[in-house]
Image 1 (cartoon, one colour):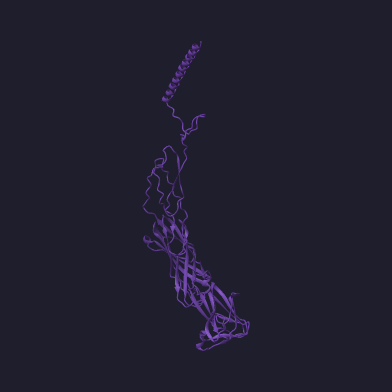
Image 2 (cartoon, rainbow, N blue to C red):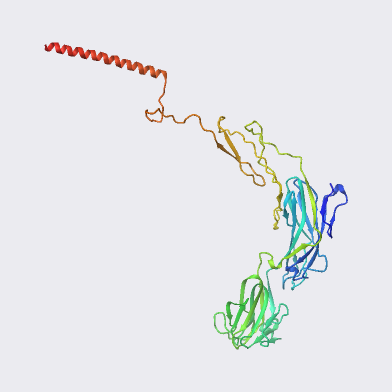
Length: 472
């Protein structure tokens, strides 16, 4: 079956295999323009030319693989966002939108490490290919359409020394207040054998840096005076450092002990910050270097993200997924009307399963899935044949739902479970047995008692008459 590619008139190219009998992939050539983030630190706007390869004929159960080849279209490049002694890593994430048979999105991803060291604006390399796939679980037709591309950059953990007279990044000094001192003795251990010096109260020096921490490096010297430190226009913690005193507060006996970390602060949010040092008194204050610290980052900083928008004509490709010959085996349990009920324990999910890779993929979900048929209710062995019942089926889940049957009795019993004697009888909770034999016995016993009573009365009358004659 020949591949069917849909597109609008424009510059986008669609490449379809020439042999119809073996045509099972389509190549979509798509151009992008990228802005912001590492595009701004590079050429400003970066142009990409990409090729998306999509299979066009599949069978149920085959993976739907998409591969996206990336490349620069011209001389524009993404650039390193800051000074990076250890390089960094570029991440690219694409969007492939699914419609018709499925509604969702695939997100091909890829990354590549950058060789360091790099300064701000150093061109960055792209991964050659990004990819993603999804499982196909039912027959149908799916339309795939490429969306945006996102380019992220993550710098590694590092420490960068910024010398007192370095050009980039550059330290700015209050005009006319500082002297640049060079060619210092190596035994003093000054960084690059130089430093800036001032003896004027209120003189300041400032550095704008990118990282998560900063350190102030200068000499320990008994001639030094206190220095006030500000970070992002707020007094830092601690707010002052005195190079003429040791950590325990005692005075320093030596002079010109260079290469000392006098003050340190970490735990800043990764990004751009400013440190300012200010001489408090008319004493000797030095600035040898700043040490910029970048801690281990959990992911690419959001400010480095470049967003790439399609500039060629929109294109799409249709994927046909053929069914299989296998069919589910019906459940043979009888229903009240004698017909077998279907087995619902393994109905297909009807969608595209997401890739198991660690990429931030959005799971495509079916857009036209019809509900599975409800199973016919079957008789429960615990119910009497004369009783009515209702079978309720709970909503089915994914990927292999099992219908759960809940039985509710609705019939009312026709025979009382506890019999009660008629009104006026003893409420014992049990009714006396009523039989013909017991009635005959009761009548006979009553007649016998009547005869005995009559005979006793006659005997009593004779006894009284006898007493009366004897008295007379």
